[in-house]
Image (cartoon, rainbow, N blue to C red; front, side, top):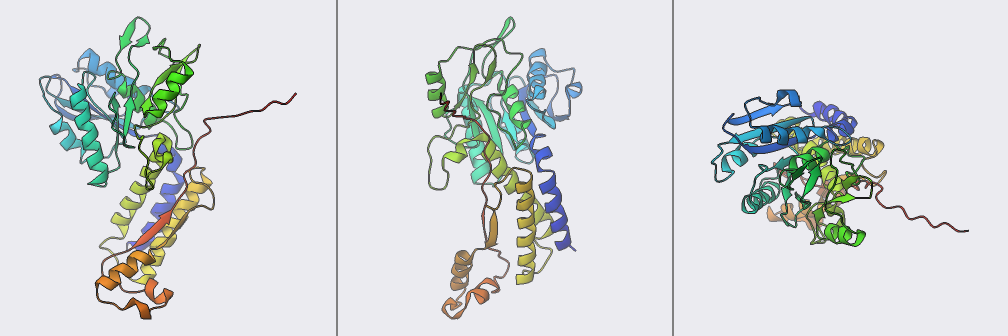
Length: 355
């Protein structure tokens, strides 16, 4: 009895969207002979004591988070002499996570290979995952190009590769109603000082950078590496917050429909209407939670795609009215079209004071 569960699951997912949004999962690849394979951690207390000091610190940085902390960190430990990340990536291809990071000593070549893998997962396998990578200009919404080096924490200095886990933890711990822009890294005492012009240039080049405002160090703006916009992916796709919302919606709908609809019910017009109503109620809950703009969400049967399919099956659609076209038998296929407008966060305030 799958269909009633769809309504319940979508409502539950809509209500819990904020909580799930700030309790994301960080995937970490490390190289360490102290432990092999995959292991899950829900707090720093779960970090294996057999790991090297550097790897333990790298994972600990992910747990610091930002507004909140990640739900958990999943690590995959390769041998110290591993020359590629294939084994770890094959494992993470079957795991649910939000942000992936490479080992703290990763090379640019290997980090770039992970960027290629992320693109493939998103575009070829419909798995909406992301990565925080050091100085990788991937020009893609799924890759965050973290480009601040010489990060000083007291007497210690870190590379951007060593601090990718920290950034991933911040992003995974930021509620979907907020952006990570201006998130303060309290432990960081200094970074290379950027002028506003330099920071703006870095942001426009698709770089996430740390910025010293004269008192504290913070994320200048929460952007990913996307710089080339298209009609399908406009400027909004440069914002990490917007992509996180779109990815969550995609994953929620895909998971719930697959679990409760696909293969479990007949493909009748009535059942299509039930799934439309369920998804619409999910959107409405996201609007109430301040994640989507109110009254801007819609979902309906895609008449253009449906008519194209019927024509390919030899149906003369010219004799069908809109209702007949909408309710026509489409075998095992369902064609839907949807519109949503994710709410951005306040990032710029312009105030004119008139005296």
